[in-house]
Length: 384
Image 1 (cartoon, helix red, strand yellow):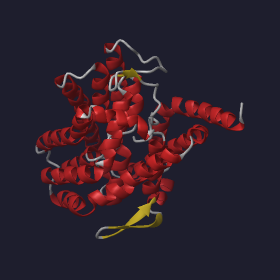
Image 2 (cartoon, one colour; image 1 turned 90 degrees about the vertical axis):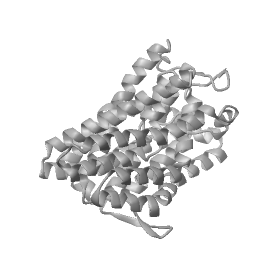
Image 3 (cartoon, one colour; image 1 turned 60 degrees about the horizontal axis):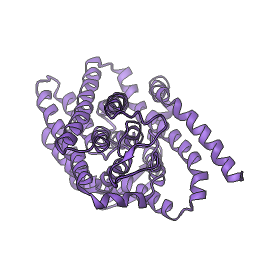
């Protein structure tokens, strides 16, 4: 066995061990943000340079750099040549990408109607703004792992993750503009400005650029080097994702502890749960309406229900620093989408008659051939 294989084996063992404890790691990060928020608050204020954008310059923060590393590492795990099979049958790819944009906007409009009954207009618009930042984000890369576990078409899942990410400079401003129409006051004005001025540019610089760089590096990286390096890079990405969770949560929890608003917290959790559950359900209904095969239906369900909440949290903390309750539904969504993904995993895998044997390989019905198990997989926490 070569030295590279030994290093890869050691890294894979450590990665598997770390992934087994991820269920507990995120709540621990939230507790740390509530108990010792000082380090996170310091990191939130730490300038890390500037980035030229149309209409001005954007300040780079610790959150944006951590997110960029997570996205780069996730894209580094994707073999682009495996996605070309989707071009032969692009219908489901187009439908899934459109659903990822349209379904959250529909759910957001319905929630806005319910929030009109709230006496606290500021809190209601703040929560809607947080939900809008989730709705605007592309598919979470964690959908690749959950979709594979439930017997989904892995190639289709990865294709939907990448297509929604690459189209985000167009879809993020569209969603933010729609959210501006259903919110009020300063929140509506801020969302409108983001949609018109910086939404697409921020998506291109903060989301698409790291992904494209990861795809480009993987395209030229020899497989033997990728095999040796990826476990260690994924370990670093998991650490970055947990750090990002802690930093994002530190401001919101510190404010919540200083000024407790249990009703607002409960409403944020309920709204996030409603939006997440409706997204999963509507994704499954869309697949049934299209008469998709079971593996494709699983793929559409998970990609409709899981959005990149880490990117939404970064936008919330950088664009609404004086309104920490905007972050509350995003933090709730980040946890709840994993709970609902686990429920969907059990339900859909059972319906398909294949648990995808932990580990195992789902049938890839895109090209009519069996696909290797999770070859293009992205770490569950890569796009939370």
